[in-house]
Length: 232
Image 1 (spheres, rainbow, N blue to C red):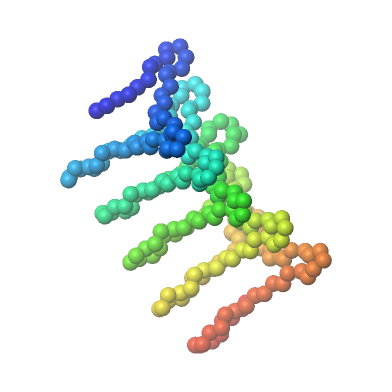
Image 2: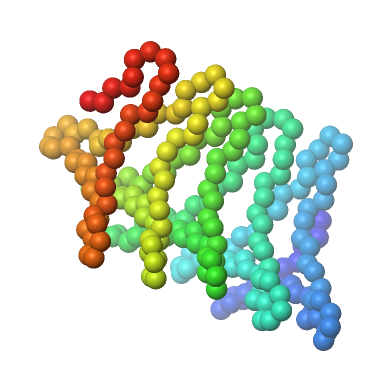
C-alpha cells in the first residue's frame, strides 16, 4: 500500500495537500491528472475509491468542490461526467445524490439544485429519464415532495417566462401504446382526508390584456371498436 498523509496540527490546522499538474506553455496543454484503482484479477474485484472530507467534533466539516476550469477565449468549458459502470450479473450499480440532514432546532435541511447552463442563444436542456427495460418494464420515476411534521412540501412545475414573446408550453401525457397494448392511464386527483376537507382542483386559463382568453377543451378520443369513451 501507499499512504500519503499531511502533518497533524496538535493546536490548530492539519497540513493542506495540493495535487496538481503545472500550467501549459504558450501553445500547449496543461498536464492531465488520473486517479483510479487497479483492475481486479480474474476472480476478484477492482479496488474502491473514496473521495471525502473529514469529520469534525466541534465545527463545520470541510467542503468539496468538483469543477472544470473556465475557457477564457476560443474554447468550450470542460464537461463533468459521473457514470456507474456496467455489470453482467445482478442489479446495475446505483447512484445516490442526497443533500445533508441537520438536527439543529428549526433549521432547514440542505438544498439541492439541478440547473442547466445559461446560453447566449438557447439555454441548456435538463433531461431526467428512467432506465430502459429490455425484456420487462421500464424504470419508474417518482417526483415527490418531503414529508412534514406539519405541512408537507409543495411541488411546483412551471414553464419558463419569455421576456420578449411567449412563455414555454407544457405537455403532460402518457406515451403511445405498443402494437398489442393500451396507452397508459392518467389520474388527476387530490388526496383523501380523515379529519377535514379534501383539496380542491382548479383548472383555469390566464387572463388576457389586448387579446382573447385561452380556451379549455376536454375531449374523449375516437375509437373504432365497441362503445365510444364516456365522459362523466
